[in-house]
Image 1 (cartoon, rainbow, N blue to C red):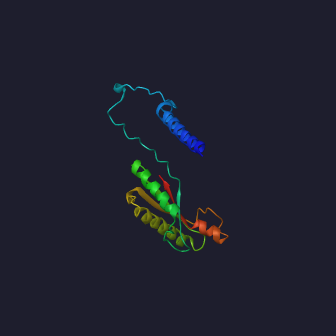
Image 2: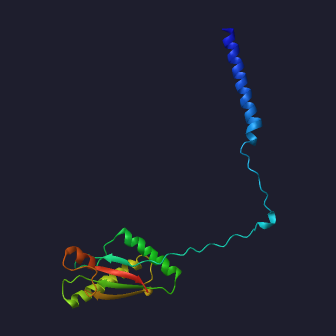
Image 3: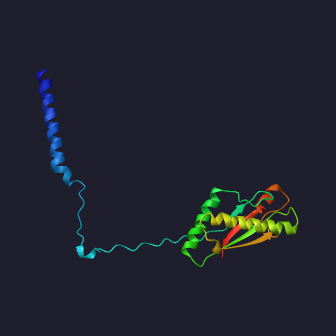
Length: 168
């Protein structure tokens, strides 16, 4: 039993001393990175100028409408793209927006022309609500003259009931 106790004490003492020796003498030299001196006179005390971040030119924004209505149907995509148009116009003071109102082929030409105008003006109100200056916006109607889809199905007519917003 004495041998077991003595052996345990010797082992504990050896483990403690080996750990202490490793931490104090060996570890400080392990993986030590050579330090490089930097000349003080090469550092500038002036702050760097702010970097201009170029905003990508926004693509066409399309707002959709219900049948025979001129109220904009809200969507997350239209909110996101309208903020891109706002940022672009703020960075480029000469830029402006064209809004063209479109309809499907239901109704007379004169009625669709008027509905296209109403949709373009509704889109302009939507954008001015997003803090875009109305002086930067031009509206006009295309009526039923430039469909993007066939007017033979409900899906095609729904795609044609739109207002297209582009940069001038």
